[in-house]
Length: 529
Image (spheres, rainbow, N blue to C red):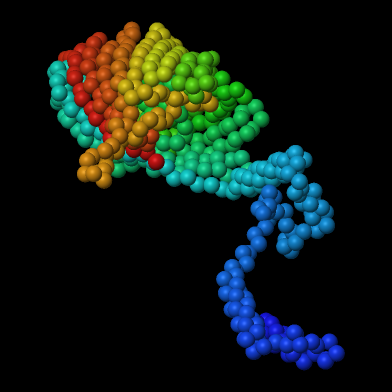
C-alpha cells in the first residue's frame, strides 16, 4: 500500500509539471525547492502510515455470550446420536433467549422431567438387582476375661459337683462367628451362621430359609432361629448392655434358638410388631438332628410395640412394651435318664461364664407340659434408659406330682456420659446399634502433639432375681447385683467391664452345701462386621 501511495504522488507531480500549455501559467511553475519539499512530505506520510500499521492491535476473538440453556442430556439423544424432528421440536420449545418468565418456567419443567427420568432409571436398576441372588458375609469376635476374686465353699461345690473346686480365672473366645446371608429372587432369603468359639465343639446359630412380602404372614422363616421369648434374648449380643444375659432370660429360654417355623409381621406405621411359631424343644445346634418319637415341641408368640416414639428427635425418646408366651409339651418321661427325652429343665450360669450352671432344677420327672409367660418394658429418654422383664413358668406333672411355679425378673438402667442414646428397632421390638458422636482414635498431629476422640461411654447397673425352687424341686434362688461400663470405640467395636456380686440360697444340697456367694470381674473386647 505504501508503494501505491508513493507512485500516486509521483504521477501527480509529473502531471502537474507537464500540463498542456493552454492552461499553464508562469506562476504555476514548480521549482526544485518545492519539489523537494513535496517529496519530504510524501516520505513523512509514508513513514506515518508504516508506524500506524505496526502499532495496530491484534483483533480480539469474538466470544459469544454464555447460553442460559443446558446441553441436551445424552439420554434424550437417539442411539444413532441424533434427534428426530419431534425431539428437536421438544428441545426448541425449551429454548428462549428472551430471559422472560416463560423461559424460567420451561427450564423448571425440563429439570423436573429429567429428575423423574433419573428416578425411574434408579427404580428400574433396583428392581433388576432385586431379581439377582445376593450374598453378604458377616461375623463377630468376642474375647472375654473373667476373674473370680472371692467365693465361698458352696460356690466351689456348685461349680464342680462331686469334686468341689473354686472357679478358676479364665480367658476365652466367648463368640467367634462367621456367616453369610442374602436374598434369592423373587422374594426368598437365607442365613447361615457358625460359632467357632469352642473349636473342638463348634455349633451353628441362625440357619434358615424364608420368604418376604407374603400375604398374611409377611415374613416366614424355616430353620434354626430364636424363639420369641424375652427381649434380652432377642437382642443381639452385639448390642446388649451387659456381657451376659439376666438369670431369668437364660433359664426359661436356654440358648434361645431351636429348629422351627416362625412368622414375623409389623404394622404399616411400625408401632406394633409380632412373631409366632412352633419349635422343637431340643437344642440341635451341635449335632444338627432330633431323634425321638415323642415330638417334643413348643408354641411361641410375642406381641410388642412402641406406643410412644419421638419422631422429632429421631427416636431419642420412646416406650417399648411387649408380652410373650411359650406353651411347651415335653415327653413326660418319669425317669429322664435317656438322651433326647424330657426337655423340662431350667438352669443358668451366674451371668458369667463358668464350668457349670450354679442353679439347676434338673430334668423334672413326669413333666407333661409347661408354660412361660413374659412381660417386657423399656423406657428411653435421651441418654438415659431403663429396661425390665418378668417371667413366670408353670410346670404340669400330671400323676407324678403337683404343679410347680418358677419365676424371675430383672431391671437394668444405663446412662451415656457422652450424650449418645440407645436406639430401638421398631420393626422387631429389639434394641439397635449405638453410634458414637465421636469415635475413639489417637493420632500424632503436625505440631508433634497428640490428638484424638473419646468414643462413647455408658454406665450401667442391673438387679437380677431367679427362683427355681418349688415343692420337691430345689433348683435354688439367686440374686445378683451387676455394675458395668461400656466404652464404644466406634459403632462396630467396644470394650465392656462388669462387676457381679452373686448370692445363692435354697439350693438342693450339693456336697452338703445349699448356698454360697461370689464376686466376679469380667472384661470383653468385641468387634463385628
